[in-house]
Length: 395
Image (tube, rainbow, N blue to C red; front, side):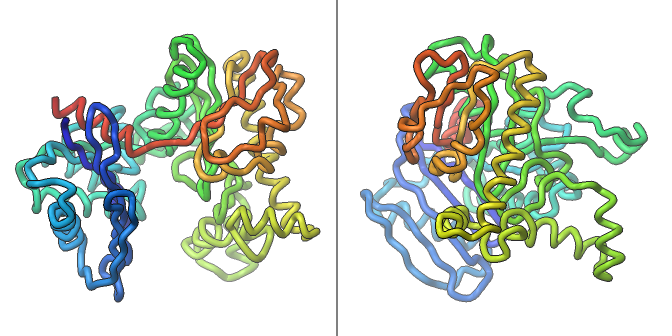
């Protein structure tokens, strides 16, 4: 057995999962929240039981040390040297990283420089990397990039219709996100379909509070809905998705907000929250729609309509589709959203069963057996992808 820990560090949080590899057995998992703030919270699963305590955790290095101490204190591991690799989620790899890599000083420097492209995420991811490097200096670490999977997109997919020098000088292009999730579910879909991934045309719908759609042909991403940032694409919980760019100066003029303030509105006050006026949580919105709230109903229709359009577009781009995948919190659990997205796709060979669609949070085919296009629910597992890449690279 080889123990690998998968880490997802945020600006004030640290999620973790400890795996036995290559069996991919989860030994424990948990999260440290409110790092650097008052009343930080540490949660860990011990023998199937969730244990939580509140304490002061001033920085990520203290959080890492606490996590490692808890692993030995609860006898989850006997010694720290049982951990032979640390895999870190990194949001943005730009064009520098088309696959996961062993972390070196050069890699750390590149991740830091890419913070211009992901100012909210890369510095936080880097904080986790450096904290583990200080506490476990001799354990090899691997960076797994959200953007890497989409580096296979052709220029016609990733370039914007802007002066070409903007791309060559400033790196302005579509990067795409959720790549680790899209890669995982596409590989799992091939297993479930019993067909080589290289022969498949898949459309992956990662639907959570953040949402993106990916066209995957032959196991490679050829297009995706998110763009230069995770703000583009479909409507999301609080993000607007695609809008006319001329709206930004128009809103600035009308509201006297700065460009940064308008971007804050587009990222944090728009999407389904903006349309409903009361929530970005799909469960609240579905309940309100059932009770006759018109704006909740409208938010659901806008959300589903955007996804529906991307599916049609990507099916056309790949000259057909073999399977549509739903994953992440909403994709895995909301039969209401899936129904609205799939409604009307019969013209392209999507025949789905309303009875089979009444499923939550588990793998399932929800298409009729005769449907040329299969529809599959696949719970995503980004952490196991991090563990897989880590064990492969350190081996």
